[in-house]
Image (cartoon, rainbow, N blue to C red):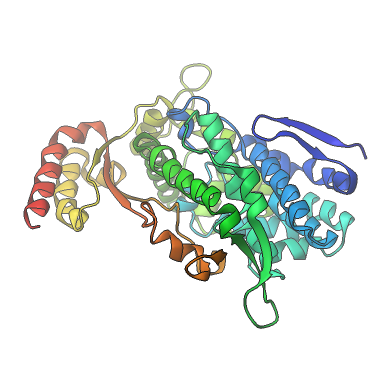
Length: 434
């Protein structure tokens, strides 16, 4: 098997050579090649023209950082291979348009699908088993958080992992946003493995405060800014909500056996059918956008096969033609959703009747740059005041340490004129109570 070398705009050369050369077999599987057809940033390309990159490139980038981390920490060869493969395959289960898809199909989260794809009979499982028979089960243990030692799992999924380290740099590069800048080299230099607890798994991933805390803070600020300015950009969120509403309508039609042709697998999922792996792998961004074109009546002959359902047809036409919903920023005033929602519903029903719920959304976009589950928490050692302390505790003292919530009203443009004064009135009343 030959060495594989990829020229990457973020990391330079990404190589699978030496002991990593056999991992190339994983790249050639249909499941991995499918990642080329899933955009890394969902609908962000509607706002940032350069944000067309795929999860294929991101997977390679995460692998590359995992390789560097394994060398920096001096991981045992077996653990290093597990970490690198887990990084390479961490997104293998993503559906079309990623997190928006999971909102429509909550039981279809990418970790659950990832575990199925690597463990159930198929091309990828065969490729992994050829490398080592235990690998499919080992990789599944990363997703269900059973892998030991725990520090290795945190390298792949934690508050500071190879996934986030790559996607921030990569998304910043392709979007053109200047917010995702941090010193990757110094962060890797500051990572250590230390015993910080008693029990059967005492070792954990830690950051040396004196060596690398400034670089880590830079990374955390970059993540917060990217969420605020890019991932949760008002137009990106509007497009995502349009897609969610559209697919929710499709799901309703599927449950009534009235769905249009084009996404048979999604229709079966809407009915609660457990898809086989091979059928799920046909779902990607291209398949979905082709269906949306058809439903909007925009086939190659100018007519297409427009959806009979007027709501689905209308939402598809708006999205493919970039006639997006508009947004009204409601800030973070407590109680604003409860105050404004009845009037929003009334106005939407007056305009769209029984279809009203498909044409508005009160969006609560949390800036999750600092949020971490308990098992994803990172420890900081050699702190001059606390000694050993969690990163979450230190974030409480940072200027942007508290996650904020931005509430927006996302709605069809037809509702904008009527909703703007309602939103302003609600905000004025809430502020007047202070």
